[in-house]
Image (tube, rainbow, N blue to C red; front, side):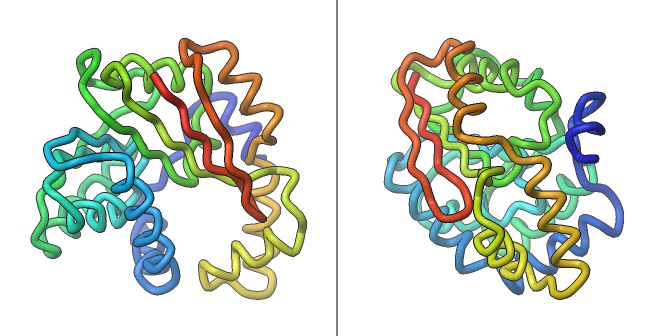
Length: 217
């Protein structure tokens, strides 16, 4: 179903779904989010411009803002996500510019960012190759894009552990696991996408349930 709907539009969250996502991110994913922020911080320095694509309710950008003096922008297709993420940043006392936009037609000039991060969202984009070329376009020369996402070929045990980390149990966990599995790409599919883009250098680090893809401009 997820792949079918994705043929017609980018997938995003609105309304009560956004509030629920914000809640479970705070309760179940914050430790993992902090580690993701540390990984990004390893590749950047104070003053660098960072873009998070599809930040949801903003927790990764917020945690990254706590680690250094970066210029952080978060762009999400969902107006409700942008509103809540902006409120979360204000409450956390950090400066992050959240705005609404599409990953396939980003509202930024060429060569704007030193680093791009996209976590658990790339599978939601209708036009993956176009999105990757947009990543390349808005990156500065020498910049890096990091995509962290699920692997459709991940084991059932790994996928079950993943959805349990979101506090989902029983039938809800089973449904979420099926949705994530059906929507995610395989490593082979990702590599095929990259070969059709302007990125010439990349590396992929595998994990039990997915991979981290580093794309160098």
